[in-house]
Length: 334
Image 1 (cartoon, rainbow, N blue to C red):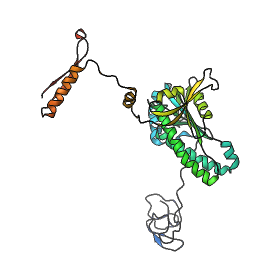
Image 2: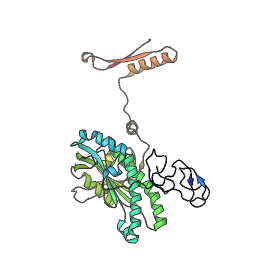
Image 3: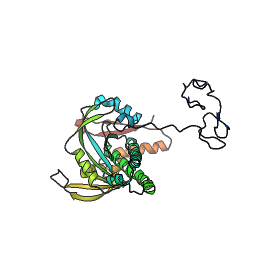
Image 4: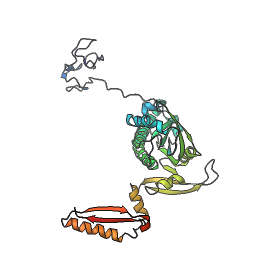
């Protein structure tokens, strides 16, 4: 408990300050107008004088994953790490960095740049962690994040896309603030790609070693470096995983560094109306049931009886192979 008179930090159960002897339960006297204020007051009710300094936010060490990873996410990773170490996993890699970072650094004071990037990193962390992605490393002017490892998600590509869209939306608002206050354009470029990786050891400090198979990571980095500021760009193999769930613009094919074949790329625009697998199947067109007339008739007959007040029980069983393997539906009144 902080002493309201001398600001000395006492134990929570203390009644009097062991530094100055003042009561810790008494009202706070304003040093400006001497008005009495409740013990939890930060400002004087009479003259608005500061009574308590604001608590400093905990510092973040970007080189230490446990410093910036939310507890709920860290607990999940450490709980499941023994089952995922050494596994081959299909993941989505996200790269994000600030466009024209060098020009911004040359124009502004280093302290201003540090404050701007600190705010940017908080936005990136919040949105990536919201979709249970993990930040693998900070690159000075951006981040590299993984979705689907070490926490497995079947929809890792969708999560990464939603995180990218959320980041750009928030950064747009943040960039307007930076432009008003500092007079510089502040935009992000984001590139994404899906592919296999092998997860290595995961330490108690949440550091994760992994080995990329093929060019999963390299292609994601190329997607980021070749897109326009303020845009999200995804590789063709990732597009096949998310095309039903998001609206994308086909940017055509181009030869990427280190690739023998031209790579098709897409600009991620926004989410579509499709959210679930069933909705995705409906959007492609459902296949009609064949040979279920008797079953549907029994089902509708039971429904009619139920509506008329006669309860029904429906059951099904599998016919033996000798009787043309299939399913039967019957009903009876309890």
